[in-house]
Length: 279
Ligand SMILES: Cc1cc2nc3c(=O)[nH]c(=O)nc-3n(C[C@H](O)[C@H](O)[C@H](O)COP(=O)(O)OP(=O)(O)OC[C@H]3O[C@@H](n4cnc5c(N)ncnc54)[C@H](O)[C@@H]3O)c2cc1C
Image 1 (tube, rainbow, N blue to C red):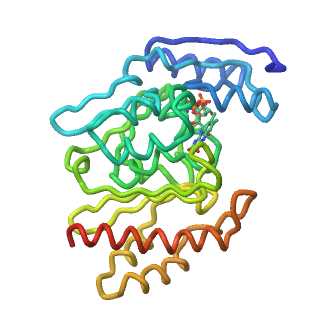
Image 2 (spheres, rainbow, N blue to C red):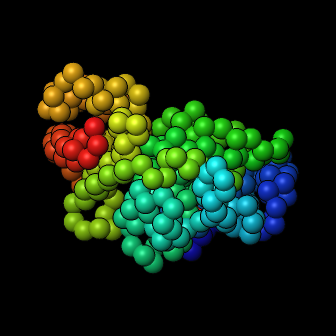
């Protein structure tokens, strides 16, 4: 049971949702955008989240599109992970989304909720970081489009009251060779010990990572080393350990040492497969 009262709104347009959010915030209701609701409901029950109003954004048409135009793939923030796993425009995204939780859960989890949520994994973002995706955001002052990489630093840096409306991936990214590997302790529904998702673009590896640190990441410095053809694969992997953007996680699923070992092993495998395929 959720031990507090809240108001519920179901706007039908981006403008209405952003306006409602601003109005409710002004009244001190501490509103939350609500998509799949799995995280909000879980945290509300545990009382680690409290809100006076939910603004359910699933009825906004722009947030449920999945379409290719002449330049890009457009992904609405309220597409579920099942829908992402079943689309065939962007194979790496389908592969990654299809490995999160189980199908019943994926039927509820949304792309936007996964990216904007509090948990450290946020795996659906990995292919989008690797593909240099764009984001479309909306707030009370209107909409803006930005590169995802510019706004994502440990988390998506939204302005107060902004919502994620869409992600866009340019067509030339969609067919690049992809590779991903997800490590878990027990079985597929576990949170990841490590998840690597890479794209090979013009002979260079673009790599996004979840599970290793307290946040998902893609790092220019790390990629520079991984793409240094003057070093052997083993040397690059060894060097990579000093270039991680934060401490390696240690928790009940695996120690930091264990995660480092998996990182080294999977990187060697990835470099071998990606380089064997086209460098
Ligand atoms: C059993 C289970 C197993 C899971 N396993 C994994 C896993 O292994 N790996 C993994 O990555 N995830 C996993 N998840 C999902 C993850 O933990 C997130 O909680 C989930 O993706 C949230 O999605 P949602 O649509 O339910 O979000 P919601 O609960 O609706 O929202 C989550 C947060 O995001 C905000 N938000 C939602 N949409 C938007 C938007 N469009 N714009 C701005 N803010 C927004 C909300 O205000 C809220 O703060 C699992 C979830 C469950 C229930």
